[in-house]
Each structure stands twice: as C-alpha cells, then as structure tokens.
Length: 396
Image (tube, rainbow, N blue to C red; front, side, top):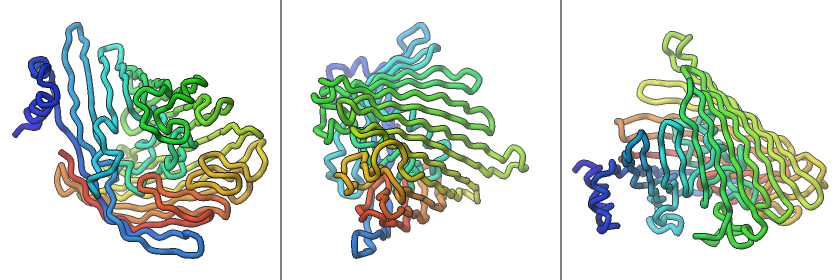
C-alpha cells in the first residue's frame, strides 16, 4: 500500500474528528531502522574488557505533511518518534521524542515551533560521517561540540524543546538559520540537571535560554558553514557558555575527471564560565570521503586542545565533581586533550538498504574522559575506548 495512504489512515486513527481536513494535506509516513553489532573495548579502571552489544542508532518513524493554504504559503508539520530497535522498550521512544514541529513556509523562508536540532548541529554533515548518517559510535560529535553531554551539562550537539526557528530561503547557494529555545517548564521531561535539553521551572525563573545561529553556502563542489551558539544561564544563574565553529568541504570530482573525492575540515572554539573563571577549549578535524563501487569509504581525524582559560587547573565543566569528571566533561589544565579517529565503509544494497562497517578510536590524555557520542561507553579518566562496528540500515 502507498505509504502516503497508510499515513492518512494513521492520522485518521489518531485524530478522527480531523480526518476530513487531513485528507486535503500531503501527508507522508517515513522512517528508518539502523542497528549494528559493536565490539567495544575501553579502560574502565584496572580492567579493559571487550563488550559485545547490539545498538540502535537514531532509528525513527514519523509523519510529516504540508498543506497549501494559498498565496504561496504552506502550513507544515512533523511528528517524529525515536525507535529502540535493539530493545523495543526505551523510555526515550515516546511519540514526538525527535524532530517535531508545526510551521509556515513561503518565498520568505520557513518558520517552525517545536523540538528540533539547532543550526550548530547543521555543521555536522559538512565534515562529519555523512556516509554512516552522522550517527552510531562513528559520530564525529564525540569531542566536537561535546555531543556526549546534554545541553545543561556542557554539550552543544542537542535537540532542544520549546524552540522557535527561522530559515531563510536559498539565495544563490546562501542560507541563514536562527533558533531560540525558551528553556521553560512546559512539557518538561524531568531531565537533569537543569532540565537537560528542554528546560525546567528553575531554568525559567532565571530566564535561561539558548540562541543558535548559522550561515551556510552550498553551491557546486563547495560547502561551507559557520555557526554560533550561546547558552544563557543554562548551567547556573550566572554561568553562560559560548561555542563557535566553522566547517568546509570540497568535492574534487569536478577537477579530477569525475572521481568524487570529498575533503572536509572543521574548527571549533568553546568557552565556559565558572564561578572561579573561564575554561576554553579548541578542536580541529579533517575528513575524506572516497567512493568505491556502490559504496563509500570515510576517514576522520580530530583533536581537542587541553582546557585553557582563567579558571584554576582541575576545574570541571559538566556534571562531574571537582577532580572527578564524568564522561564528556571538559577539564582545565594540562593533559586534558582528546583525539578521535575512524575509518568506515558503507555499501548500498539498494536504494533503501545499506550495510556499513569500520573501526573508531578515542585517545584520551591522562586527565581527559571523552567517549562516544551515540551509545556512550563508560570509561575511567584517561581511558581510550575503541570499537569495531558492523551495521545495517533500512529506510522506508
């Protein structure tokens, strides 16, 4: 059965009084299942076990649609749900747990209200592991953007609830994006600390908010983006954090006789306020995507600096205690840097089914504790987690 007809049937079952109106909209059911087998190894303090596990990686299904309301204006909506394909029962798999919004779209651009990733995250596909869908433990946001942590700890790779967003139209390859999250307590999912990626009553009392903005150019072989994000009073009443990143990629296929080698790079600067001064951290990375047959090889190397700034050595930014950082926390001082490298190959069995495999490694300095972004693995400070991954994705 045509999936648009199925989607209309589902929409009618969920909201039968609105069935007549739903039938006039262009509604689509979509999704994907992405599961892998991982052989993970990493220092957990005196032991270095190998763990075999099956993981679900940003699996989802959803409904999206548009309605032409005249004058060149469309109403748009999306309701997207996480799917725990590995266990089937994750508490994070509720309806609207992923990109969910309502909005308007016209020649002037697109306006949305709801829950969605920020413009800062839209840099990720430019340099990141797009062949493996910028997810799994291959995610290059393990150190970049501190993606392992939620917004209220120290992360910048976050899907924010209670958000407003505007995207400009594409003008000769240029686009702009602006997002504002109110961090209020409506629909709070009791994430801790300080409301996690959504917000809570404590956050709204101190007028916490998040502002994210990005500018992008995508035309021919060149793709460039830069983004800035500010967390105002998110971690505390007088603590604000700033992130700036620029990324670029160039497809050499246009000058190499059609051979589609794609080179990417990224640079990031983070600044965190603490009660005793600021902590700063830089990051840079390079990547390459090489087509081979029906698939693509992807390679990435990235490295952060030691924590710098005016705060005393040993200051921890995140959820951990002083001199006892949690996974992903940023620490001020020497020997707090981290490195990540990976290589993968993805192969398309069809237009809807893909296989992939590869290896990823994170190398932490003595006082660092970075771990994988997606499906994190607990390690001791200074541990070096690595994994062999074999996976399959089906789109529908």
